Image 1: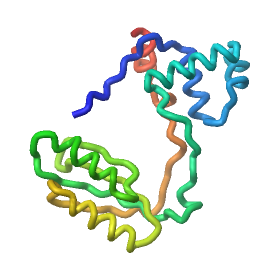
Image 2 (image 1 turned 90 degrees about the vertical axis):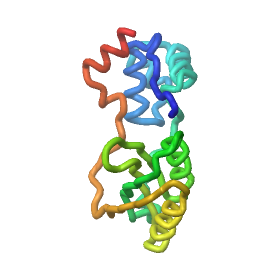
Image 3 (image 1 turned 45 degrees about the vertical axis):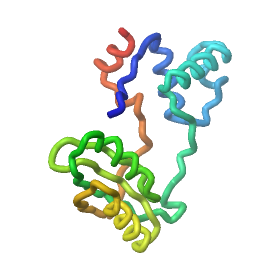
Length: 171
């Protein structure tokens, strides 16, 4: 299994403020961030570069509305698998290669994986499920279909508790 723990060496309150501003508006200019934080543009540039190099910022992307592209069908698929050495990483990677699957979670409990998929048609969804079931090691699937979505933009840094912020800033 991949070790996904991050170290927060040299991360400070200003870095967290920069993260919050970038998450709120990925297109925010360095100049705007610098003005709001009373820093030079080069200082902001250096900090953003450091956050990228440390893997804290994985990339800057556009927030594309899937409904505007006709991707209206969302399925949440529970996946049960055979438990063999290395199965979690192997099957997780294979699930992510299925066209239409956007997120995969390895879970503990009655279900081994949860796959979130988004497609345009029932035929695409049927094909997607067939490709999931065909993956070696997958024993069973059970899908739920989303009728309506309730969510806002993901805000990772805004989800930090005060204790979490302090833990990052104290390291």
